[in-house]
Image 1 (cartoon, rainbow, N blue to C red):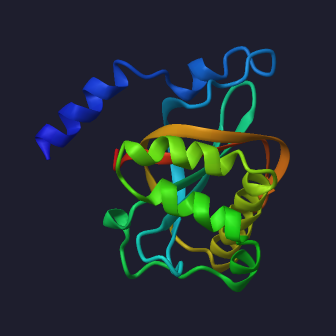
Image 2: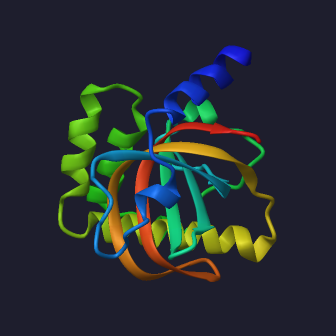
Length: 184
């Protein structure tokens, strides 16, 4: 555990925090691909046809804007007691969006370029944001507990807002692959 926390601390020395990344928003947009870390309350969703997939959604209120987080990770983070993919979210899952998710779920450097290419297909980013919005709304409707913690993520794509993510209206939605999610 101590080695894991030390690795996170070392990574944070080389990554900007979300406040730094968005200090000049909307004049400057985040670099894509890029990386960032922040504190955020996340909801976890599993239940995809591909068992490697797990979805994390959350919202951060920064001084200058509200950021929505849509993070897709590999199954090593899946905890079976969490909710499965709601029907409304499954309906938003297109073939191209599912392909992008599968690339994001594979923890291997060779898939990074493939996932970015898959996210560049017209409509995929919007489909993933709709999927995340439906899943996030389902968690809020059920009053599901969230995972609070320090998150580091690779940003693969983003969508300008305003976008509804559950009960929140966000200025920008970042789509990425979590490098770590740790409890404070």
